[in-house]
Length: 296
Image 1 (cartoon, rainbow, N blue to C red):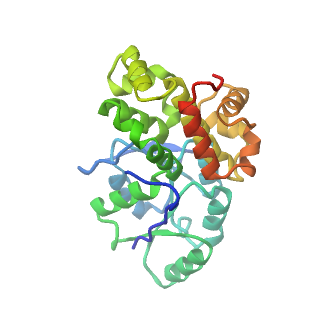
Image 2 (cartoon, one colour; image 1 turned 60 degrees about the vertical axis):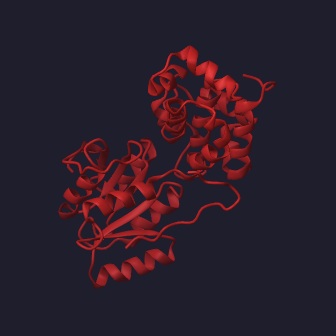
Image 3 (spheres, helix red, strand yellow; image 1 turned 135 degrees about the horizontal axis):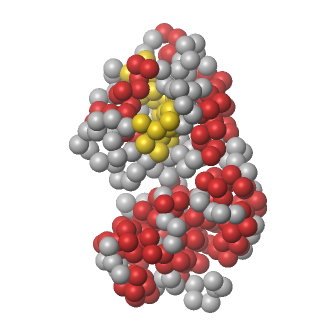
């Protein structure tokens, strides 16, 4: 069974034996829109169907225990946590709850086998805020499981930004528009504006011309905005320090993240924890990507 989430109505949507050991196996022929990194802590019988659903083009960081799972999420750009409360033999509802509390903006999906104890655990986790459950042998056919993973893993704030850029993106060649969407979905994979051009398959000069014609100030601002948006998402979670966030996003030093945050939002990274709402961050970033008189 899958229980879907809600979206912000104010914004338009257009659209084990090794720590963090990465594995992949045979994929099915349904493609997830972007590469995913899934942090998983499930018992051995549930690992093969999870790997098959994720697909060979994606990665799974398999945790050895609950502490290791939290460390993977803290250090790596994880899109989704998949966990079984019974991963270590006995039901541990508190361990799943702690993951949701420490990293509330990292989606958690429980993947477990149906049984009387599991039903009781799911009811308790639902009361504590769990929204997404897949049952082994009931909901985990490869295609369906694949679709649920993709749906739960999407980063909502990046979709809000893309929705607010909709008219401008429509003025761009499709290849550039898709590259910008990818930059917002996985900003840690884009280290320079040249990466946007390479992803789009166009020359850097064409990227600049196309963006200016559509009203954007520069591809550099788009890249900074994508990173600052994801930084805001992470910093709002109590499990991260600013240094953790800078490292996850590929910054060589936290002061570079601080400079980018100040450029785009006018605040220090630590102020993102409480001083700015999601809507305020999205609105200011969108304005900054267009503004002709703002500092670079």
